[in-house]
Length: 159
Image 1 (spheres, helix red, strand yellow):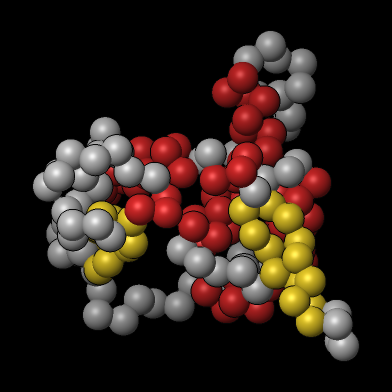
Image 2: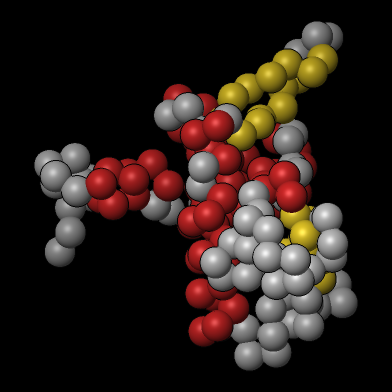
């Protein structure tokens, strides 16, 4: 049985899992790539318990993947934005999405990632299938795919 932490392992994958290796953390990061910035929007969109979300956002900020930015003074309110370190997870997130589409999306991908420049689709090589350009997170936009549900079910909060 694996220990709860991997700090004793000399392995970059294990060390990365210490930070991003739980599902809520990955879903928070996914939401950030979708443009979510505010606590309540994360909470509503994910159906995550407030205490769990607070913990994940704090950890992501402490680790330098996100930063808190005040957008209102009275009362104080903050947005959570990906840092450069967080944005560097984009290829990993896209690779995981493509893998999930291949193995767990029998009706087709629920989401397709379109190139803003020419409307082509992102390939698993992170290029545009139409113009061949190398793409990054600022070059694309998500759109409903053939496996999208008309109205997604609301997630249930799990602690």
